[in-house]
Length: 224
Image (cartoon, rainbow, N blue to C red; front, top):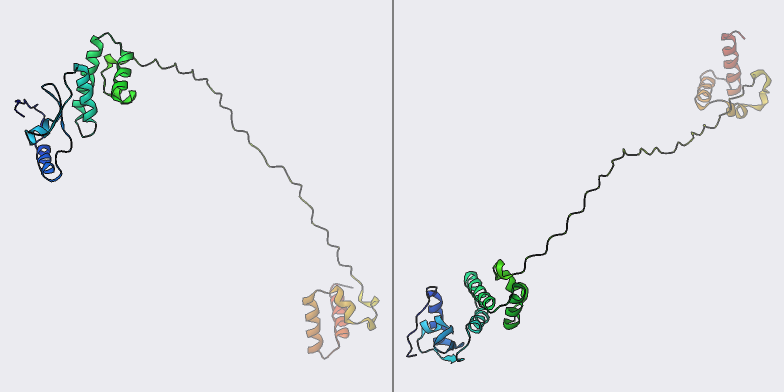
C-alpha cells in the first residue's frame, strides 16, 4: 500500500507478531477493510505487512463506518473501553440527527444485529430512557402473635386389672385322705409343695401323711 497510514496508540505488538507468523503459514485470511482512504478494520494486519490485501467499500457516512467497525470487532477480543466509545459515538451522531433516547438503541440494534440489551449495556445514561419507577412497597400489616395452643392428648381411662380370686382354703380335716396330693397340688404353691415333698422324704413318710402332719403343726402353732 502506497498510502501512508497513521496507526492508533492502542496497537498490540504481540498481536502484530501473531499476524506475521499466521500470514506466513496460513496466508492473509481476513482482508483489511477501508472506506476511501480511512482504515475501518485491519490496523494490526497492515502493521504486520504493509501490502496486506485490502477491500475498499468506498466512502460511507461516519455513522455507518462506526457501526461497521463494531460488527467487525465482535469476532475478536477488543477492549471494553473501545467498544463503549464506538457505541456512544454512534449514539451521539444519532442524537444530533434528532433521534431520542428511546430510538437510539433500537436503530443501532437493527443496523448491527446486536440485541437491544447488549447495546443498552454500553450506552451512557443520556442515550437511554429512564428506568420506570419502582412500584411502592405494600405496607406491612402487623400480625398479632397469639400464644401457641397447647394440645393435650386425650386421657385414656385406665383399665383395672382383673381381680384374681382369692385362694379358698379348705380345712385339712375335711379333705379325704384317699384324695391324695393331686387335690392338694391344686391349692398349694409350687415351692410349698416341694418343701412338703422334701420333708416327707427326709421323714420317711408318705406325702399325704407329711402334709397332714405339717398342717396340723402349723395350726397348733397359731392356736387352733
